[in-house]
Image (tube, rainbow, N blue to C red; front, side, top):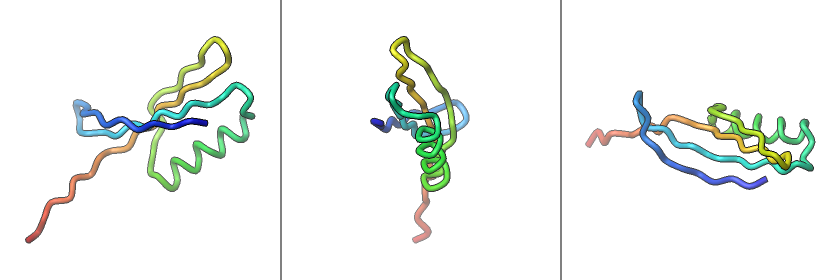
Length: 72
């Protein structure tokens, strides 16, 4: 599985997107486990999925970018 991260500003706020590519040979259980780990530990949520002709899947995960303001 390959991943890439994209930052984009949405209408409601700024989101960071991660695109996960799932190979056709990956079992459903393996894919579910990987996406669950991303959601639990990376605080990602599912934004979009797409199935391509060869069986490859692309999954877009997103999380809100939290800006920390200095208190000094």
